[in-house]
Image (cartoon, rainbow, N blue to C red; front, side, top):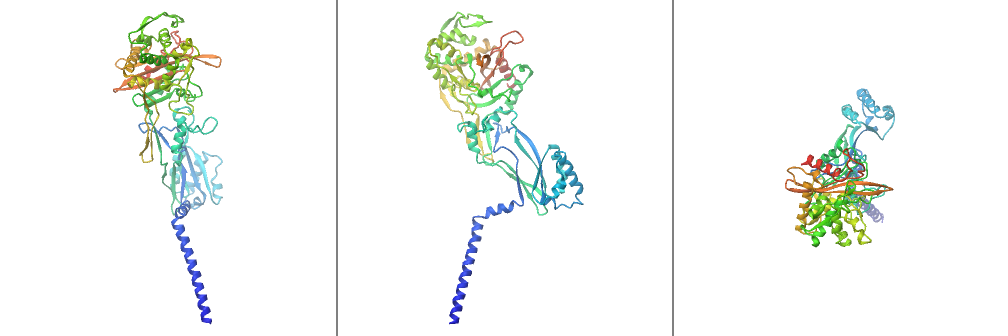
Length: 542
């Protein structure tokens, strides 16, 4: 009987041991299979440090691969107290005191003795570039110390187009609309980590650089050419134009719609090329191109038809100025108001508005949160068509005006401008590529006629200030006024094109608030403000 009881007990013990062993194996397997990486990372954290090296989750690049993000370089030194106390104070005293001296030059409150009196933790101190360089030699033989450089966002020129793209929040610190180009970039790169530098602790307590963690979708490539932008910026900031507080420039590769330059003189002011904080600016006589195109398309006028300009709406030196019997080419050359009012009032206002909308007016072109869509006010009476035809009863942005020249250079096709070229991963592989949408808005014949008219405006009309020997240049001047509170301000436009290396480019220059006269006593207008800038840009980049 005792033998039977003993066997039962032995069996129970064996079962318990088997169950315990099974549970132990299960637990070990669980941690090996499912928790291995977690505990490995936990262990590694004792020997690895990670520090942020940039405020950006992605890099903005120009079309040639140049980094565009505007940054301030910062430097820091870090002391791991536990490891730092492993140093032999007697043999390393000179290095420790030198480290203390350099850091105190950046932070007067720093005291190495306070660090040594602590048991654990890390001490971070911001230092300047000079101290960063000096510390490199000092800490080579010191345990528990490392330095690194990191980039913070430079918001000083907050309305530079790169800063506009990078800013995901509006003035009220709320996320920008989900339909904006800024939100689009944020969606694509939202899961990215901010780039980090890694440091590893060796067995002796020395901390060494050990690689980087970088975002997967690391690069947003823009259509912009930074070198071209810099060249244009120098023109805008030259002493020649110091009388103008602001100048906006848009340059587009006409056949693709790629925006190659999108710059302004003063990036501390709201971006004028998208009319940020405003509804836009009246395009003035640049809008006559729209009326001319539509009239030619509808057969209301031909190249040979002539109208009489009696000087009813045309003025020179504030006096009536008659151009006489002129055709449509001459009307564009002279920017004749009488001709276009007679011509435009033969077209229904609704048709003009709809035609303009096909070419980007009254809607955002690039899709920036702060980009103005512009407004086209429909005349209530036929006789009020005059203001629409002359470009006064609507508002537009320089990017809209530039886009509207596209069909003239593309055989009648409107190629919508765009500024994001592609998205790349950290290995420089293209994830997504973009291109401008294309829509036919006029016939090839009308486009060719309009291109010729713009060319002759530069060779013998109001745009002659922009003429350059040996270079095909076309353009249209524009001068318009708008009300700012209780004060009227005048604005100057030059919307044109040029040909380089057998390719056409659209170039629009806009100079707001050109009130007053120049040194010759002439009233400021589009030709002697924006036209002069236009020519100087071409002379710089040709």
